[in-house]
Structure formats: C-alpha cells, structure tokens
Amino acid sequence: MIIQPVVLCGGSGSRLWPLSREQYPKQLLRLAGPNSLLQDTVLRLAAMPGGVAPPLLVGNTEYRFILAEQVRQVGVANATLVLEPVGRNTAPALTLGALGTMVDGHDPVMVVMPADHVIQDSAAFVAAVQVAAPLAQAGKLVTFGIECTAPETGYGYIRRGQALAGAQVYMVAEFVEKPDAATAQAYVDDGGFYWNGGIFVVKASVWLDKIRQLQPAMAAACEAAFEERQTDLDFLRPSKAAFEACPSDSIDYAVMERLATASHNTGEVVVVPMMAGWSDVGAWSAVWDIGAKNASGNVLTGDVQVHATTNTLVMAHSRLVACVGLTDAVVVETADAVLVASRSHIQKVKDVVTALKAANRPEALTSRKVHRPWGWYDSVDAGQRFQVKRIVVNPGASLSLQMHHHRAEHWIVVQGTARVTRGNDVYLVPENQSTYIPLGEKHRLDNPGKVPLEMIEVQSGSYLGEDDIVRFEDVYGR
Image (tube, rainbow, N blue to C red; front, side):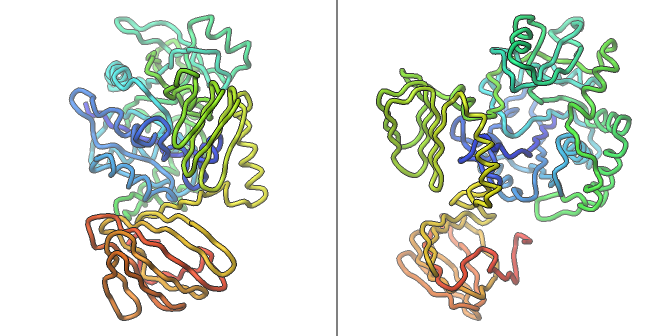
C-alpha cells in the first residue's frame, strides 16, 4: 500500500492580516515554530512506519515558486506541484491531485491535508493515519473527527453513527454546518460530535469514481484539463481553458455529505476520532491559543516589551513594540502596517481587509517584502523620482534579462558577488563595489556564488512601478 500525502495549498487567510496578504497567504507563514504551516504539513508524515511517497501539492500558479522553495528548504525531494489554472475550491483541486498521483500507474491511498493547519502532536496524527489507511485501501472514504475541546461556532461538525467492529471507527451519520453558540454547546455536551478538520484519507481511484458518479461535469473538466497538461520546469500545468469550465465546490459538499446522507447505514463514509492538537489557525485568537504563553498568559514574538499586560498576543517583525495595560488583545506589527485589536473582535479583521481592497490600498495584497522565484526584495524607502530596495538573490539564481523605459538603477553589493550583464558587457561586482544601469539599457543580475547575494538598489526616474519591466529572457518563464 502506497501512502501519498496530498497537500491542498489554496486559501488566503485574510483574518491573519497584516502578516498574511493576498500575495503571501497564511500557509507560507511561520506561526507555530521555525517552519511555515506548509512546511510542517509536508513533513507531517515523515515518521510514518514504512515511509510515504514524496508529497504532491496542488496550489495556485501565483505562489508556485514560493511553494517550491519552501519545500526545498526543508529537504523534501521529488515533490510534485500541480498548478490550478484558476481557483475552483477543494473538490476539483483534489481531483487534479488524484489524477496526478496515478500518472505512473499507481493507485495510492491519499492523505489529503490543507496546507494551512497546525497539528501539534504529529505522533497522534500518524497513529490516526495508520488506522485510516487500511480502511481507505478497502474502499472507504475516511475523515478525521477532531475531538471537541470547546463549543466552537467557527467549525463544521461531524455526527458519528454506529461503531465499526474491532476499531475506534464510526460511520458518519451527518455532516453539520457551523452552529450557533447554544447548538455548539449541545454538541459538546452530547459527546457524539467532532469538529470537521477537512482532512481525508481515500484511495485515488475511489475518489475519482465518486467524482465521476456524483459530479460528472467536474470530473470531465478536471480530466480534460489534466489530459492537456504541460510541464513547466518542476510544475504540472493542467489546461486553463478546460479547467475554467469546472464547477466550484468543496470536498464536503461535492462528495462526502452526499455519500454520508445516502449511505450512512452501509458505512461507506467513516470517521476516525483524533486528538492531536489540531487548529485551523483561522484567526489571531487561534495563534494565541496554540502559542507558548508566559506567566501572564502573553504570547510574545520579536522585539517586544510588555508591562501590566495579560492574555495578549504581541508579534513584532521590524521594530520594538511596547504594550502597557492591555488585556485580551492582539498586536501584530509588520514593516508597513500594525494591527491592534481586542481578541473578542478579532474575526472582524477580514472587514479591514475588505475596506483596504475597496480603497485600492496595496497593503491588502502585498507586504513591503516581496518574494520572487530568485529571492526577495524589500522596498526600504521611496519618494518623488526615487526608490530604494534591499535585494537578496539566492545562490545560483538569476533575474530576467530586462530593461526599463523610465528608470535608471544603481546597484551596491553588500554581501556576495554579483554577475552583471549590461548591454554587451558581462562583469563581476564584489562586496563594497557598485555599478550603474542606464535608462533603456538591457541588463541582468545573477548570483554565481555559494552564499546569498545581498545588494542595495537605488532607482531614479519619472516612473518606478514594477510594471516598467520589458523581459527578453527569463529562466522562470514569466
């Protein structure tokens, strides 16, 4: 039996603004340790007895290079990245993933995991997968029921039915929508309900059979898109034209709920209870919940000073943050935005993001630090006719051969060695040296060394927008 991790990398996490932005969503953030949520997810089954296949990720085209780089950083080799041409929710994403797992004639048991959740007890998760995998191999569709620790109104629930013989596994009697507070408390008191964590274990062929049976239009669009796929560097790109015809629906609505309603007496859809320190990290209050608290109940990250402050989350990323006299609050500081909120109102952060988008504010989409396939840049300062950036280029990486109509650039190397193409000249610029790129000149920057290349770029000109780039060659296919 082949165990195949399938990681669904969609989602924007607007409730975690200002750290999460539309162009750098929460699955890419480090919120619960040294790794990002995505990195922890791809490593989650590393201790599985007998091993697992290299992970398959289904993600947004826009994030493809960041996804690949984060997977590489944690030493995961041979991962497959399937790129959704457009967003169509989790059921089509999983269908593309299932098709991807069967390319070499395999029919694995897929462990389907969202990339943006936290599971603090990996051993308990692996143990639950060990219970679920044989059931999936036998043709069942398995979901994990998260043991309820509170009457949460932000989660869907699973009502368990009859127990299966010989194991702590139950038929799914019903999937339940997010309840009000009184109903959620009744579910907890009942003891027969679990949180729906959106984690599934199912054989690839079984999933495809159910999609063809229950969602024929979805199946046809996904299969056509995958059949017409193209390979781009390390990515699989299903056809955009075919995939755009695909209906949008979630795994729960498209398949699981329909099967549970139709077949609860046959046990086709089953739930395995799990207590593994799970959180969907859906808001800053959840980050406080899972964080390491000091004696005053505070969760503190970065350069932080607090006085007479209790039960508060404070995250500083670019400067000193001092808090006095706060209780049950959230303070999140980034280079270009600061959030201060009561934990009791933290769900309303999404309303701030909506207002920022309506006002066309860039803070809704991107942060000051912008990630690129070759590294990243940070816009340090800007004014009329000038802009200053800190640029870091990964070892062996290269920017495109390009030119600008409206700006010239001065480059000062701080660390490493730059190889510069300027017109017909190619030359090296070592540390503490600089070079100049005139307006309208073809140029390229790359890092031939073994350490990151760090430099300061000073732009000057009449227009300094990122869209003033004419690319002639680009190894990343942009």
